[in-house]
Length: 59
Image 1 (cartoon, one colour):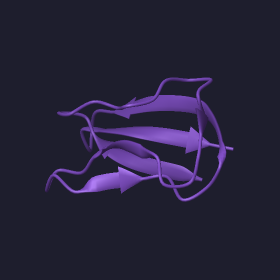
Image 2 (cartoon, rainbow, N blue to C red):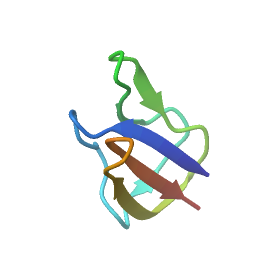
Image 3 (spheres, helix red, strand yellow):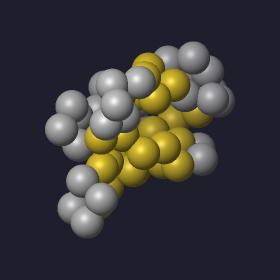
């Protein structure tokens, strides 16, 4: 699954981290939490400059 996190606030995980359902990944532009919906491993974090977000891929 891929999550979008506002780049202004950064991310709270790094590639290779094990995450659990309910873990906080970062914030949206409106300051709402981005919460992981599954258990898994952070496979990739990519910056999308066009949307000013980080894309967090969890498998």
